[in-house]
Amino acid sequence: MNITFSPVRRDDRLVLSKSGEVLTVNGTDLDFGPLPAGALLPRDAIGCDWIAGDVERDAAGALTVPLILPHGPDAPEAARFPAPLTDVADGAVTLPGEED
Image (cartoon, rainbow, N blue to C red; front, top):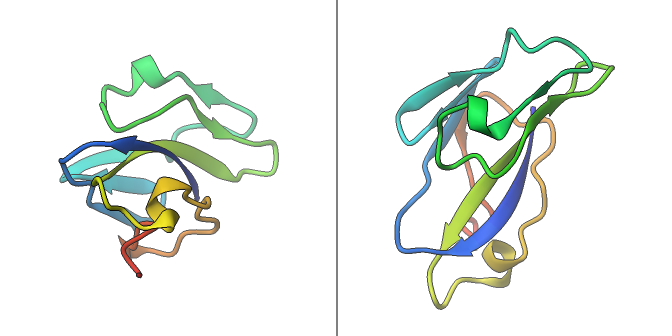
């Protein structure tokens, strides 16, 4: 699973964890396992305000999930200009800017 980010100045918090094809977003499980290779799942069909765009699984099976990344007024550069996370391991997900 790959995660891309759209940074937004907001005061709320995003907490992520991953287990296989399930991404838990602030306590809500999103199971992307059924999405076949080469398919796109429209943002509107997901029902999660943290999803920033369509979720895609490429022909090779790699899943990309775009998320909103909230940050405060004095956020580090890593949160304001986040790099994508690739091949995200199972467990708690450290967000860009949290490691600073």
